[in-house]
Every structure is written in C-alpha cells, then in structure tokens.
Length: 136
Image 1 (cartoon, rainbow, N blue to C red):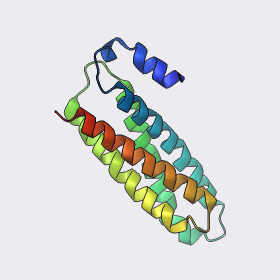
Image 2: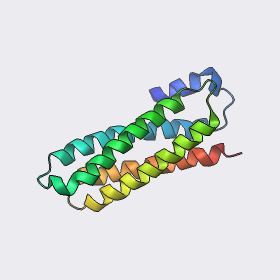
Image 3: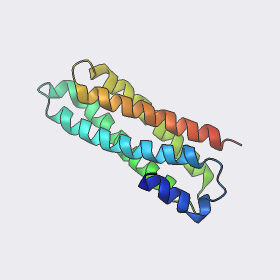
Image 4: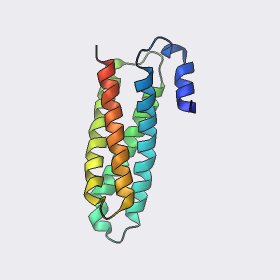
C-alpha cells in the first residue's frame, strides 16, 4: 500500500466511506497528472517550435493547477462540501480531457506530450469514476 492509500484509509472520516478505492485512485491520478503536466509544460518550453507549443503549455499549466487543487481538496475528508467537491471533480475531468486532447495533437512529434496525454486521460477517468461512485 502506498502512502496516499495508507493515509486515506487511516483517516477517521473515511472509515465508513464505500468509495474509498475510487477516492484513492482519483487523488493519486490528480497528483500524477499535475506533476506530468508541469514537466510537459517545461519540456514544451525547450522545443524549437515554441510558438506551436503555446496552447499546449497554457493547457498543461492550467491542468496542473486544477489537478493539484483537486487532489488537495479530496485529501481533506472531514466535513467536506459535497457540492463543491462535485464541481471541482467535474472541472478537473474537463481540463484533463482538454489537456489530453491538446497533448494528443503533439504526441507523434513529442514523447513528453504522449506521456502527458495518457496521464490526463487517466485522471479524467478517475474523476468521472469518483463522481459516478458518489452519485446517490
């Protein structure tokens, strides 16, 4: 068991949460996506065709910020606001889809974009899975 899973499972507010596995998967996917997007943006800045990478860089940075915020909010389990959490998960899934699509456009030429697109698509799925599991 990794540290994130151990922490989520040890939190008293999670004891009766039937969606613990989806929660853990989503937090992990968000952290991974945030880091991957940050590295992708930096790699894009090193490409010769910087002008062609401008939208990718911006989308990467937006995605990284939203994923970081989503992971942080999901990690705070005591007394969370369900409406805010749902809105944040929906926003995270949306930006991850958009970032994944943008990186897909560059994936044939830039390996870092292919890797980033995969991470974004995984994070979007994890957010949607948690939303579906949490839906009453």
